Length: 334
Image 1 (cartoon, rainbow, N blue to C red):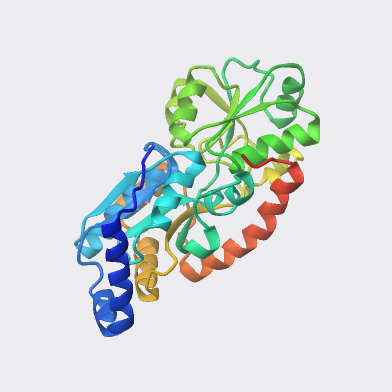
Image 2 (tube, helix red, strand yellow):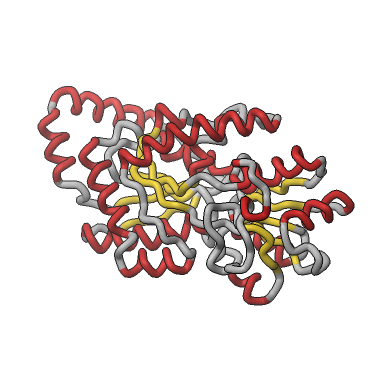
């Protein structure tokens, strides 16, 4: 776990910077126009190996190629993404530190934790949003072959102990599993991890009976036959499991069974608007770059990233949908 130390020198430096902004706005404009003129750091608040990390690395490579500046990926997992997010919230708003996260860090976490260490609405502006694609629900091979869809899974879970993996508190996987518990009288234990990679390790070891996540992150388990898909919690079927129906196709019509959310590239709220716009354009364009296309294809993603204004509008929409859903499920903040 990373520890951020605020020093007197750092505070003085911050104060001096603030004075400079007031005294010489022309200098700020010049610096902004020259952006970027040094390496950019993207903090990923989940471990390496998952979708959030993979997209950050591939798109970051594209930004580096387009700007000629190095893009550094710094993984800061922990507390369902809160540790990395808090780190970026306190970073200088100069366009050289960004957060790559999942939308649940900025939306669901506010009602899942008593203290975040940051204010999602006041401390960040969202630069771009990349669809997380279809995140299949899978079960471990140890479950009977009869467990092949959501209905049979619910029947199995009524009679057997089930640990359901979630990559973060309040994530789409957490909401999905908890909604199954509430609607069908199940007692599944939702096991929360610091990202997908450790979750899939436990699934491979048979410590989880079910989980939900990105196809690429679980690919090794698919290839080995360790897991099988039972539902696509989305509007379309998963490319890796084309014969597995969506939740709605299976009659599970509650909105909680159709995932809404995206990967968020965010910056400290005071980051100059022109830098936010330029980074947004670079991030959207990255989906069409060679590294971006390769990563998008490996995760079976087809939707292009949303630019700044569009993702900010969807952010407001998702808050009105997801926050009441968590409250209704009775999830208690930690």
